[in-house]
Image 1 (cartoon, rainbow, N blue to C red):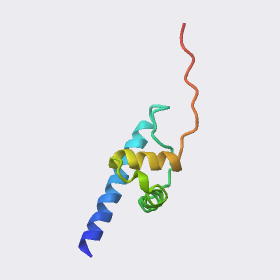
Image 2 (cartoon, rainbow, N blue to C red):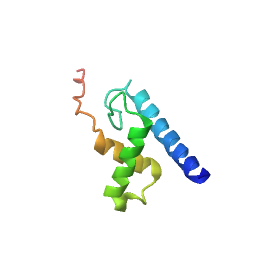
Image 3 (tube, rainbow, N blue to C red):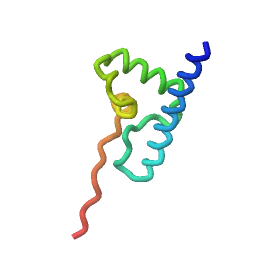
Length: 88
C-alpha cells in the first residue's frame, strides 16, 4: 500500500543522504562517522538498520540521525587513525 511505499522511500532517501554526507567527510581523514564498503546499497543499509532496531529496541527513541549514525558506526566502524605528528 501507498503509505508503506512512501515510508520505505523516505527511509531510503534518508539513508542515502547520510551515506553521501559521510562520503564527503572521507576527504578529511578521521571525520567519518562510519566506514561502509564503497558498494553498500540502499537496500543493504536499510536491512542493516532494521536489524539494528530489532536487536536494540531500547534505541528506538533516539533521534533518527543519531540512531542511524550509531547503527552504521556499529556495523561499519572506521579503523583507528593516527593523528599527524605535531609541528614544533
